[in-house]
Length: 118
Image 1: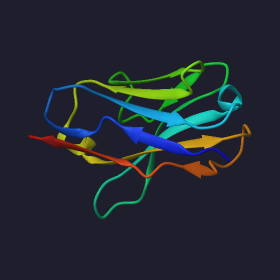
Image 2: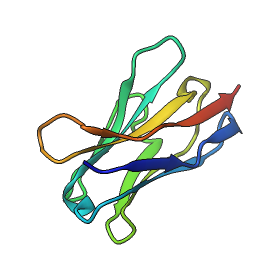
Image 3: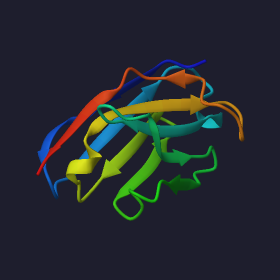
Image 4: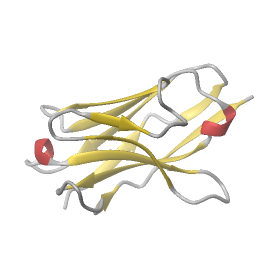
């Protein structure tokens, strides 16, 4: 497993942008499938975006066209660029790693809070 640490959350107004970062420990980061998930108050955790080890990304419909996932295998970091933020994007955002595709995400970060004011 890898250890994951997220950063970059904060309080912004609707329409603004934020970039989340997730730094992973370990020397095999480049082989992991990395994902972003989020959990809003009173709701289940939901999928946001995923990027494979060969840099193919996919997104939840709710964020498609506004969010971009990317990775830097030299820095062991995965990013989530969030543009045109909406109130409903307010949630705790979690980074996750999977060493199989398909397969479960077995390593999770502690989360970073994103709050969008309307």
